[in-house]
Image 1 (cartoon, rainbow, N blue to C red):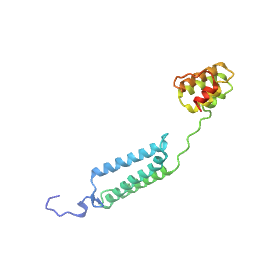
Image 2: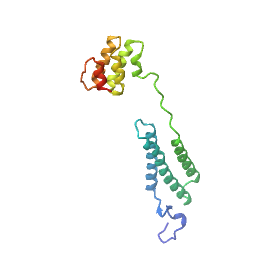
Image 3: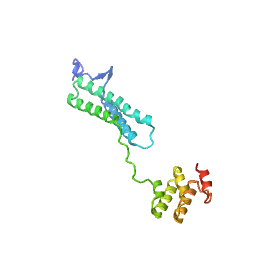
Image 4: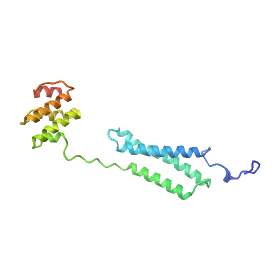
Length: 185
C-alpha cells in the first residue's frame, strides 16, 4: 500500500475500547489465559491449599477468558480472524470455566491407614506400623503409639517407644504411659 493511498476500514487495526489490538496483546492474553487455567487446575487438585484460593481460581480464569473472548470478537469484527475459530475458542474457554466450577472428586481414602494397623492381629504388622509412624513425624498419631506401649508383644512395645522418642525430638520419657500421655495430650 502506498503512503498517499487512502486508508480503508479493512486496513485499520482492530481495537477494543479504543486500544489497538496488536499481535503482542494476542500473545500476552493467550499466555495469561493458559497460566490462569494452569493455576486453577493446580489449586483445585493440590493438597493443603487455602479453600478461599480454591474458590477464587475459576473466577480468575473467567477474567482472562473474557479478555481473550473480547479480543477474538474484535478480530472477527475487523475481519482478521475466522468467526468459526473464534466461536470454537470462546466455547472451549467457557466449557473449561464450567468444568472448573464442578466440585472435584474426593480423594479415595486408603483402605487401612498406618495408625489403624497398630491394632492389627499380626504383631509384626503392628511393630512395622509403629516404626513408620515414628518416621513420619506426625504427632497426631502419638495416642495410638502410647496405647501400643501396653501391647502384649515386646517388639511392638519397643517400636512404639522408639517412635515416641522420635516424635518427642529425641527426648526419652521412659516406658511410663502417663509421662508420654502428658507429653502428647
